[in-house]
Image 1 (cartoon, rainbow, N blue to C red):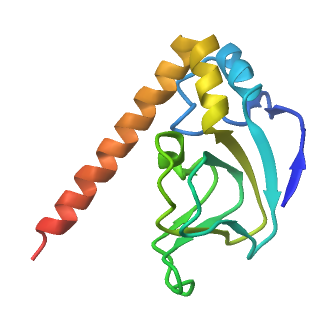
Image 2 (image 1 turned 30 degrees about the vertical axis):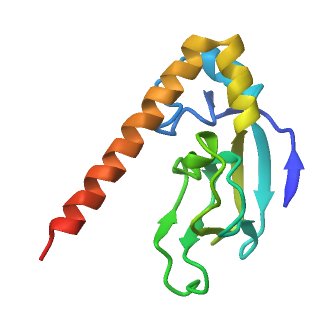
Length: 154
């Protein structure tokens, strides 16, 4: 894992603007959010977080691929995520242990928003944090509906 501070712009647009979580924000708002984000790089195969660890952050894939796996089942990922997808969102909401492992399936760059940083964003820029929270709630609602539909299948 590598910490770095890089350019925040990519081809004239903010590098987080393609994410469903941040895409509704203006460029100005994205620059504010960027002040609360930590960027990390992971090599292919490197564990981002492990099952059982306390959730403390949400991750957005700036570039690369991430596999979400149950413990001991790395060959059969639950999900394979790519550019602009986000994961670990429950880490912003509670401190329950992670239920799965996240592993870099290819070299990747991640934008990481820690719970403490999100709380500081809420305190200093409530409107922006509210927009992010609304997108997060919509995403969680969609996942819940998908799970319920799968449970109804014969």
